[in-house]
Length: 457
Image (spheres, rainbow, N blue to C red):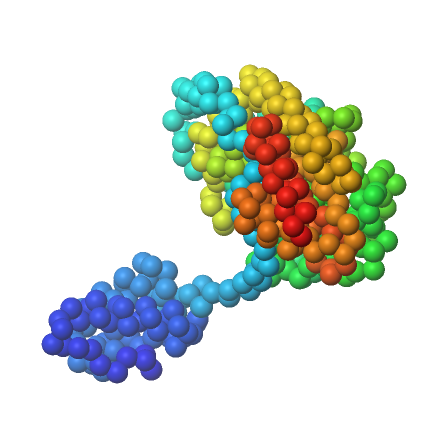
């Protein structure tokens, strides 16, 4: 029987009342998927309303997809109208960095190439056919996928084909798509670097995946420890490990690929700041060695601006179907004009020119930070300086780096404690310092403040 006992006749609007009551009963599960509803005549008689009121309510809910009218079977609750299964909420993050000088992970947005972007956007807008403004391929415009494949193959030594490139709303969406595809295959455990990115961990846990930390040493992630887990995938930053800055050694790369091929697991390569190298030759991406088992992801968040929400995912052939299905379900594709503008920026050389200028400026800022550390914290050991947009200052054993970071935040600067980036409780103390957003004078003043905080601690 339909769980509706009576309608408020004094309030009027009996049709709207009935529609809302049925909608609520479907939403909260009182009317289960597949349940058969009474005929319109039966329900009208039971509620003492005209049959037309019931017909209108049924038709509205059929239009909403909550009910289905089947010939010979009457009206039933639609299968997809069952209460959605909610992914578990991500656990609370113990520490979120405040905003201020020395904060890692944020670029200098004043460096965004507005003039070059405007020209690229106007060219894309003028050249886009009318049909190009319709819903396009979920993977993104063909032109951008072609430009990205060429760029990644040229700059990152990837083996990317346009058909395997998916344009995403940043790395965050790429991880979400991969998490959905992994869960669809029955994967529940994923390995991550320890220490590693709190944000990456949050995205994965938010999609119901259980995380296992794998230690990182001077040669990167330790594959022997990975082999001891039951993980069906591993997410890592092989070109410039976050936060330590180490590079995954060649032997470790071979071990990791062998593990993935032996177990059927997926390697997810987060190439988050690959564009910035200063004191060493560029390190090729892992995907170029094993495109069959490596999903490669990156974005313009560090190189241009996070607000553009443009990223990419290069998917192994065996995984592309599930990832594309997840992408189509997520958003039917992204903002096409911005994506075409980025394609134009790559094609006309503007992206390369911007990156060259950004590298010069970031190196100047990194050198200013190193000089300030040498002056004000001469005993500090600094690591991870050859690439990227941050470095690590090691602290003396026994130092509570979390407390130091909190005291620094109160003093107006924003380093991150290594302890907050660990899954395990052990590990040497240290601070992660970003230098991409701050000019040299700001960096020098921030280090002086940090030295005062450390003396007080």
